[in-house]
Image (cartoon, rainbow, N blue to C red):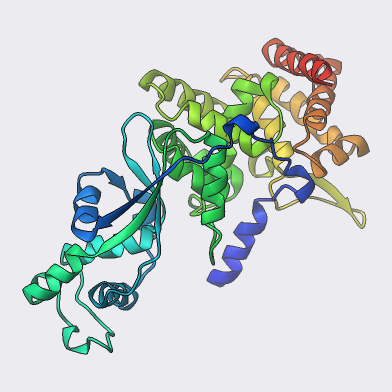
Length: 391
């Protein structure tokens, strides 16, 4: 049995990362580089009230991941009483609702909110040791007032900022001991019906079987895989690097998706995963490799291979014939032993020309084997034409 650290390492390795050369960034136009911020000194009582009425959003996912123990939270409360400066909190303004999404300061704000709600008593204080074991309502009025009226500087990135500029700022703010990955940031920034749907889809049993996990990933990397699939399924012809920007755009555009779209996306996902399980089972998204005369499937998910297999499966009917499934499985098996294809799924996978080349190789092999997938072929042809024009 694996230890918790060994299990975590195995899960981390399962989600292969793009290499550094894949991470091409789109430049933001000079006219859009203006960072518009507003600074407020919110008193603690106001912060508590705004969190309670959801003017300030301390994300539910972060509440599950609240990691400060009561001693650390108590030290923060002691700092408020002693008027020790508290680090700045950063919020993002939601364009339509006017709400503030907390990007940096989640642990501090949630600790303050919990204490003012009498959810824990002070512990481990030295300077103000006589306050240990006291909840907020048990403090003398003087101390209650000192805490409630302390001001904390909060900087708000307004909705006027270019979306990618805001995302870049959020990434920089979150370089800590455990920095947020891009999907965790998207979950904070683009919260809404679409992020809720992604959270539901990763709990699907067929999906978990395909990626070889018992439960969803706490770092949301499985949600990013599904986002990646949906973005490519609906916008394949429009794809261009960087992948991160491409995914940001798709999630931003769909964060307030309709109920009908939710239903349609889930049906698409269910059909795709069902077809994939029939086609590859537990070997889905993994490369077939030959080492020292032995054949096996890699344990790690290859994201470029994931893209292609999901695209094919999503364009099949729900009750696809066993013969057609077997033919498609054979196509992928032979591609995984083609040196050119192997190079295309292992190196610089984010590059548009290499995405196009992978898709074209797949299309040609499917056609050679008599497999008709007109809608997918049209998407690939459209992407190829746009790529030629762009060059």
